[in-house]
Amino acid sequence: MSFLIAYASWSGNTQEVAELITESLQNEGVEVDTFRIGIGVIPNVKEYDALCIGSFTWEKGATPDEVKDFVADVGYKPDLVYVFGTGDTQFGGDDLFCKAADKLAKFYHSPFEPLKIEQSPRGMQEQSVTNWTKGVLEHWRHLQE
Image (cartoon, rainbow, N blue to C red; front, side, top):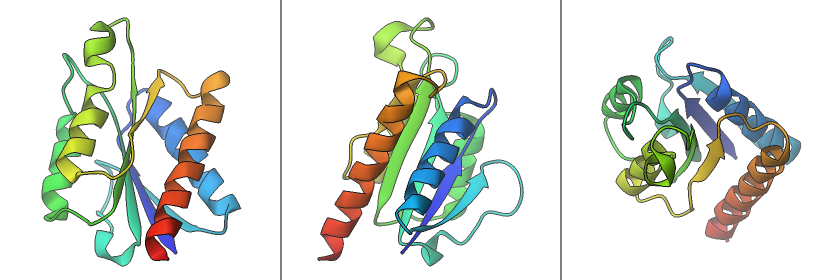
């Protein structure tokens, strides 16, 4: 099985989440490739069993342009997309917190609740990333039965 982890990150928070997801999946024997959105040639998403897409939330709950461009460049909606995001409740409160992740999950009809991380995944939130990733993997495996 293989997963593509595609993410956009400016401050490094979303990248840290992507790295934790990658490590957790690899520890379970999953082949994982990572792609930082906006840098380099987009991988062929069709070559993977699942896509995990991560984004920070920009301005007033917006999805960053580079993430929108990635979605458009992929050109289709993969069957299985899991979404994660980082945000900051001090800018817009709970209503706008990780709104980009919510929008992406809705767009892709993601079968799994998006992971939402307040700023950095360090500390207590690191376990949230691990738990979410285990849930994603269990969900994926269940679909294969």
